[in-house]
Length: 416
Image 1 (cartoon, helix red, strand yellow):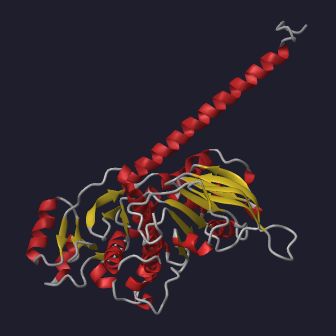
Image 2 (cartoon, helix red, strand yellow):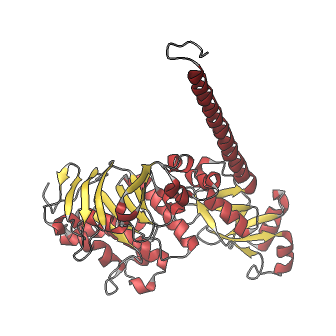
Image 3 (cartoon, one colour):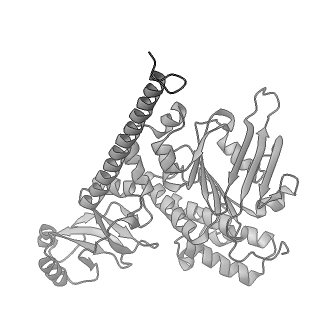
């Protein structure tokens, strides 16, 4: 395939790092020392470690934004260490903190940048820009001609991801891409990335200093020490339940059972329906719906069917013909790709005992309540308790066997 031809539906590629090293002049110790790692096609691997441990340097060597001092990089078996780094970067998507959008370009121009550079025809680029905006949950008609300064931080990050994916690269590198946004927006961007990965199956290498983010996003996590030495490279569940040493335990921290809520998604538990009305419904219709629902509360949706307010009976009595000041604004929602920990935090923040679940454009799809979430917590805690009992039983059996062996002579006879 020529460089100007788009790779339709390109999925992930394998990545091999072999003895990858980076030395800077004047520093006796390497910034990255002899890293060897294999990343499977289509998996999300998270680099997590303390500040200055070399995780971002390691990431940037994959697309040679930083040139390695030694070692090899193979993508789908091809050694890319010696090929033109500019051509390499066009085949590897790259998303960074604060999006990195060009301020003088519109959203469409930013997304079209790489496809234009590699010679895609104008019609194909135009279609791809619309496809990418829709993919990251932004209305093409609304955002196509906007400039980055006209976007919120979360919207900028979505455009940054769309730009990184525009030329359909098999590999996506992400360097703390959600680190500069507020916690609620960050949760939603993480959910969006999980949803995108379910659709696209790219190979994603993602750098973060936040272990909870690593658990939520990663198929596997590489916990890195100084100079990117690998302390443990395993699944989130394995690291939570069996950290390799005290250094890794320090990252896991307290409350490992609760952290395991990051391994379960809202889609894994029961999502129930709830009585809803819209802002366009007459007040009498809303009264009747609340009266017949058998609940003390009803969810008001805006004109795009997004959760807007929780309305109680008393709120409607005080409405006096207008909903403008009635009810309590919905402060947070979750998607089906959100973790149960996100959902639990949202329920506790909202004080309603439930959280609304939304689709890719923010539309209402149901609710998850506190009882469902607490049952999940209890199941995880019980699983941990049984696992601990089993481990203790195995340890006691091993000690008993060792004691028995020590009491017998070399020939199997009991010592005198």
